[in-house]
Image: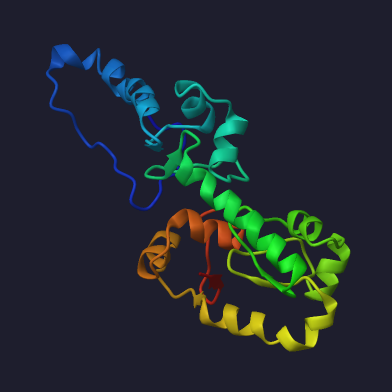
Length: 218
């Protein structure tokens, strides 16, 4: 049931079936069966993305809107991939991270001068939480774009700029990988103990193309 020539590392493909010739004509019906199994996940807190799934299909099958599904999983794009686990319902476990981020931001606003970027953060969100403008935040951290990465350290108060200036360089130097011949995003993620989704998000990647010598943030 592929609609394009794009396949992903780790994706499972069916090569042949065990059906007889008389059953071949009805093969299309069982092939669509995974869609019917998706609603079963409504009794669970998560669902695993299957080949051919889209955000709209998963949201519709589980009584959610696309916006709600993206919000529950901190998704910034409509891109999902086979094997990815998505949260379907708000629970104590899914609410805790959001509350934790808010608490950390508040603590940094009152006492600390640095902030560690969490999953789902944006420059606007961090700047607003710390009472500064995006321009000021970018100036404090010598940022030339709006791209930030999970675990990146940002200065949010100018007074402590000199004290923490060396911290970001140390953090990024310890968590990077230089692409070698034969590497793939899937291989790099697996070898460094991170998920493919985290690797894609940390580097703002929009395609599977990487090149030799490219530095990947882990």
